[in-house]
Amino acid sequence: MAEDKETREKLLDSAKQEFLEKGYMKASLRTICRNAGVTTGALYFFFEDKEDLLKQLVEEPLKGLISRVESHFLEEMNMESAVISISDDSLDIRAAREIVYFMYQNYDIFQILLTKSQGSIYEDITSRFADGIEEHYDKLAERLADEFGIKKPGHYMIHWLSHIQIDAFIHLLTHEQDVEKAARQIEDIVVYLLSGWNGLFSPKR
Image (cartoon, rainbow, N blue to C red; front, side, top):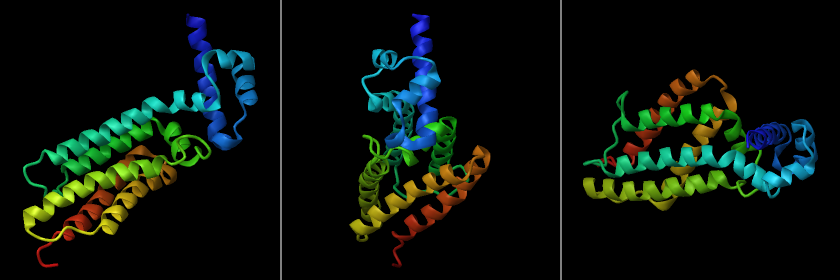
């Protein structure tokens, strides 16, 4: 029913504002319902509890981000050479810009996920992303080491690089509100990160 859909959307909009303002742990279902103009009982008609409310709010944007990251990883693994280009239209720069635009299209949702989700099932979301990136980089590093006939960088470096890549996107989202500025800045960040990555596989090391 149209009325049910409208009520559900009001609750989601109210929850988004409450989570942004107070964070997941301190967010009040009573306040969410009051601001949405519905009773607490109405909320439980649509959502199981506060965590389900958060899940329904963030799951689709989160899946969209994961899909874009995984698609980029697949492209990298399917390249003939594992050497990563640093040109202006390189695969990594294009992918980074796409991810930035997507995150800024869902700016409030990712603010909640990255800075307001403590106490929820998403509180370790950055670590989960870093683990996925680390797994990909480990495979890519194996290919590069074989390609150049050198020793693969150690686990610590792969782990560290995975985390600083995540931190780069988080820092942009939490410090730069203008999406176009963020898109330009991510290009310089990617060039910097790729230079270090490629340097690890220099035959002269």
